[in-house]
Image 1 (cartoon, rainbow, N blue to C red):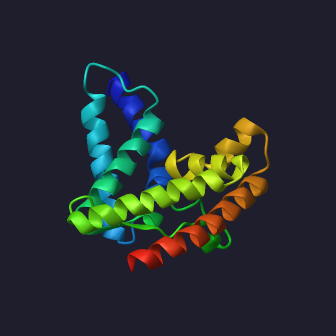
Image 2 (image 1 turned 135 degrees about the vertical axis):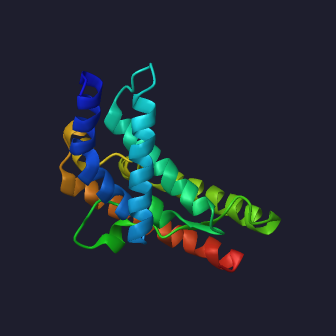
Image 3 (image 1 turned 60 degrees about the vertical axis):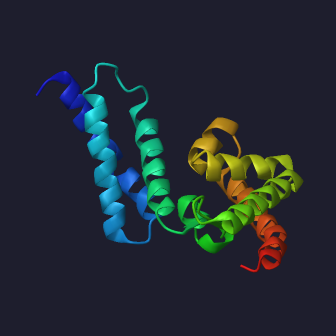
Length: 185
């Protein structure tokens, strides 16, 4: 086994559990989650053998996993964002998840309109949040950063970050409920 193969194997062994958990939290069907995990590692092996090295292999793996999850949901008529961007494991996960379902891009003109209305409402609701809550929500939900990493970088306690995320989610749910009702979801 050459050095590149050893590096690839070490990365695989180091990231398999975290990546598997990341995928399983976002995909309900265990067999789909396993398929995605296998697809990600297959793509990793293929990309690793290219002449240009993969910089930051961990980040690359999670980005590919997120893309594969999104691709899988795009095949369906509705994309539940809660499964794409749910929070880290917490004692009461419902307080940390935004249950937002967006119609697929290809579901027709009415669905496309509803999608744009929902995204505009989400942006407006995000803009209403205090900066510290908005930053935590965006970093965790959209950028995929862990609370542990955010705490290490900012010096803010994980429990404080969790509380900020919870308050953000509660606000966003309340604000988006009216939009859902208007769109008759």
